[in-house]
Amino acid sequence: MPKLEILVGLKNHARIDVEARQNQQRFQHFHQ
Image 1 (cartoon, rainbow, N blue to C red):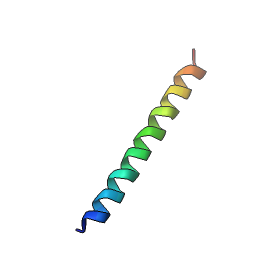
Image 2: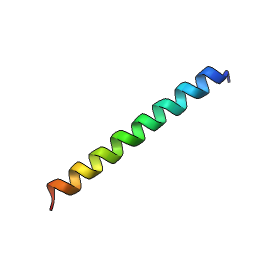
Image 3: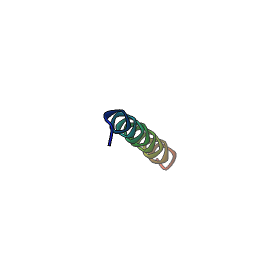
Image 4: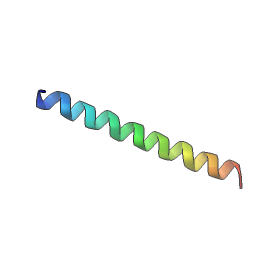
């Protein structure tokens, strides 16, 4: 696997993680 693909994969994974965390915070805020 080329380094570029690994970097793109990590970047996508990080973005998904950030979006999931934001959604979780929004969900918790909505239910308070």
